[in-house]
Image (cartoon, rainbow, N blue to C red; front, side):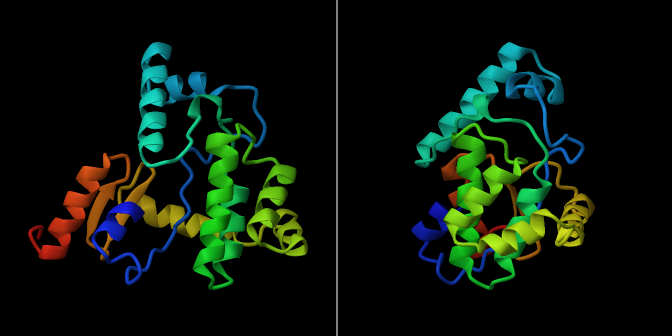
Length: 196
């Protein structure tokens, strides 16, 4: 999405609002399950099919310069990470929020670390620019839980069942799991009014 917005020269004038969305809020914070087993069960496919799908996702990320090692990602609950993103967002500093999100993506998609582990989250959040005392305060409370759940309820009401998903002008929905060319074409059609 960002690449398409930049190519269209509208990135700087297009506000992006990140919403919380857990693919599976029922996941535990600790698990011994690996991503291949989790993905195959969750999508009702064989391990071979799941591996092929995971490899395709990783290749799509690589084509945009993202290191995605989804096969080694740990399928755990992401609620605390979302609460820390809400903390970053409360600072009204878009660059900080994006750094925190990028740090958490790195933890989950590239490093194969648990996004539910408080030590891992704390290090990533501090490295991205959040204050240690605020991170600790959030992780040892339920602050921002209501906001995370409100985002999830909004997604449910809009019929969103996967991520990434983009809602543009509160009217158009685009699944983010699309090749770049399709994303760019959709944005151009929306911009020119070719889509009603």
